[in-house]
Length: 445
Image (cartoon, rainbow, N blue to C red):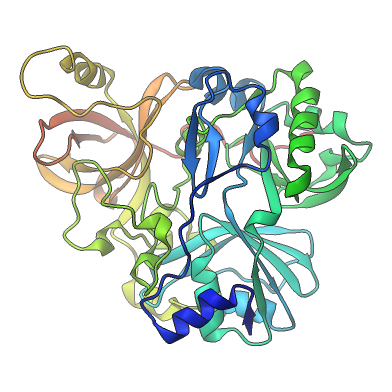
């Protein structure tokens, strides 16, 4: 087994407490020049190790685009690792809960990776790019690299994060934009499938994905062509009302689609690994919920609605722990916050007395967890609170006890950090996703 970053790997072997990844100052996206052309304020936000424009128009305009028209967004800051060699398939099967026996070249899968206790350590998108080659894209690939050093055989792992861009093209008109860029037939790409096309003189991979809960695609290509590809997609999309999506609006769609996000709606168990990735260890999360043990921020697959990603017919890390844990007592639901109570929090900012924590619009940056009560008893934890311009309401995800998970159940969310003025907010349990799931529709109909 070989890891491309030999200095990091050798340091970890010599000192188990050494960092797996080394923090560096944030860089601009490889498409920064093209993006800056439409960034009037020049304001940027940090996504991982990159800086992205906060807004191009307004966050309301941008966060409704994937329902009304489509958007072009930048996910290049995600970590990417190439796994190759005769043992690559066996290693990834051992590392993840998925059954990879029928995983064809060109296909993608949501790949869940657990620790020995059955907690989610990492999750992202795994693509099979060749007979013995795969690419894993996630918030961090450090857990995969760590495990490759422990259990990998005849496998080479290379960090290719800086070599490629990842652009999202999501929304009902996304296929129309693609069709203006190529003579190929992107409408024939199945969900979780891909196609290779030429755009502006560069070969890119087009993946059909659904992070917005709508028809959508991703474009993957070489970083040196990012500016040209961004401009080509942007210009082709003008006739279809395409919006460029800023960092401020990027996470809103995940809550509406009922998709929990690592580092925001739960913390990955990999943070307990010696040399945990720095991006998840910058401080305690906000909100009214404070864990007695860090494991209270961790989640098992079934708690997040990912039971179908676990195939027990093969050996994988955490398999025995999941079997021993049995059926989880909690499940993922949506919460719709009471409008009057939410407006009351904003009103309190103009009143005398103890200050109340403000509600950032459309949502706070970074993880925040709030207590969920029924009859003054804690029954779960809310996360990802946001204002949805699409649904005209305040929404969040929540992992709560199954006895209170029936849609229509009334609960109370505690707003405000401990030691500050705390405000009870009424909320109603909703079925997920909040809006219809259109990811797998036939785009040609």
